[in-house]
Length: 167
Length: 253
Image 1: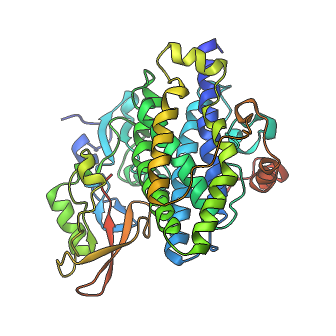
Image 2: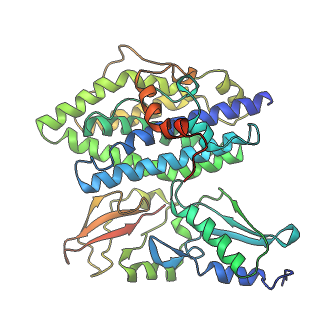
Image 3: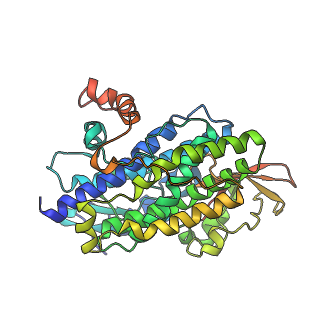
């Protein structure tokens, strides 16, 4: 275990990053979303956090960078550097079954199938309603409350819901 | 700057300018959309495009003097320094006109990014791979609307056909190349744009056929974007977009 001249370890940093919640999906954090690709201790004990953007224009990315720096410094980090990596490109394929269950519980239909498979990406497969589990649903708009979500309506329970798109 | 870096700088500006100008145009729909859902869709697409522009500008700044920022490239260059294609600067017109413009460009971007995802340059490759995921949804959005409008009422069909006829002369500009391309093609950083012309046109033909609208004939073409020669509309966009940074240099949020 690497120890800094302050008390933070790499494991501590991961633990802290788990506290940073996506403002648009307040039930999952940036680690679960797969945005944090690496944490290491660089020269002069600077904590280097590597992030990958979800969507190119996602305004939350700017917020995350500030939140990470603030949180780590509050917890004793001397210096924090945020590095952006582009490859491999972020994908909803990285969301774990547990994370998808959290999305569903919150009322957002989790991505169905794999983004890496065009069969799923462009399929007209019915999206399952996160509330009543019916597949009697229809697409209202390919772009919902944020770019990462599409808007659907369930014809069984009559509720509209967000679908986290395969990406 | 060596010649490859100079070419990369110019190429990044071209990709970034296309995204920024089209993104800015789409943002004009904010609060003007035909329905709330479409208002959100058009502005979300705008956000994707402006995000992609920012990434390409940031990469471009790595080839400039140390203190040049992505904002400087977006807000402090004049009309003749913008190298976007003339298609993206065209006014929004009505909803059908915007959808047609989006469709013609998204189809192009889909094929371009697919090719650039194999670029020998790691950053171009990374940005294209990421951009392609977004552009796939832009393509789906515009092609589905196009089909709906083509098969809708007489009025909607008339409007989407008018848009196709009116915008067609600007499409050739997307496939224009210059010495920047020649140099980057040699190094497998980019591709010869003529190789994606046929796949682009095949997609257009296929969707037009489903939408029951006619493919316009190639009568005249308006080109010049990559040389910085634009239609009258770009200057007006820049006036509005750059006003704040020009009037209050260095202003920050």
